[in-house]
Length: 254
Ligand SMILES: Nc1ncnc2c1ncn2[C@@H]1O[C@H](COP(=O)(O)OP(=O)(O)OP(=O)(O)O)[C@@H](O)[C@H]1O
Ligand SMILES: [Mg+2]
Image (cartoon, rainbow, N blue to C red):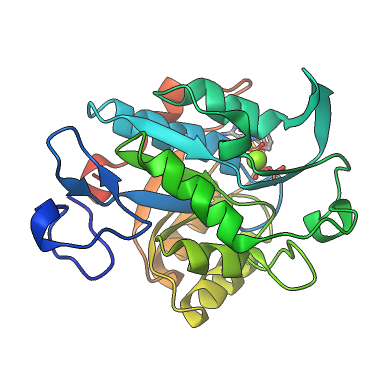
């Protein structure tokens, strides 16, 4: 079972361990520690598709799974509140019914960088951590989708990297396999490493059906990125989560 943080076993006795934010309480009263932060080489690289595939991956292993999109820019007014398409998809694919404000505490209307879209609304990381903690109490696994890439600014003060670090969960890097992806992936991976955030691996998202030497590019990435390749997710004309999920390598991410 994949583990991170200071504990060496996924399940530990409640009595012997003080829970932190990255843990969920199971029915048996044990704490299980499992959450991942999905970042990408850029915006529009397949983070949402990967998030849904990862959610399905753990659901297929009979775990309850919830998702989160803490900060979303590009929202529409629905039922009296601003809602984002990614966050709604994540809500629909969660095993439990999550309150929208918990899974997407910061929903900004304009589809621009969050630090510009926020219209001076203060972004409070501790509020996101409280929402995360609430969600963790409702599911065994939480998959959190970032916004933009690793150094995308969320506010004057914080970047996505600061959010991932504050959440204290390991990262999955989504690499859109297209021309230029080797540079983007290496830069992103280096930045994750220099932030000292564990990267459990990366997903190759095949977004360009016409790409030449796709396989060779992925092989090069495998050599250059010092974290496991968790799966090559195929190009799809329209999203089919089950087919994406089938390509996540189970032994690498259980
Ligand atoms: N496996 C795939 N096959 C074909 N197209 C894909 C695939 N993955 C992603 N795409 C294309 O890329 C688009 C963006 O994907 P997605 O919404 O998952 O990106 P994102 O990184 O979450 O974007 P954002 O930064 O806006 O959250 C999709 O709408 C789709 O057109
Ligand atoms: Mg998205």
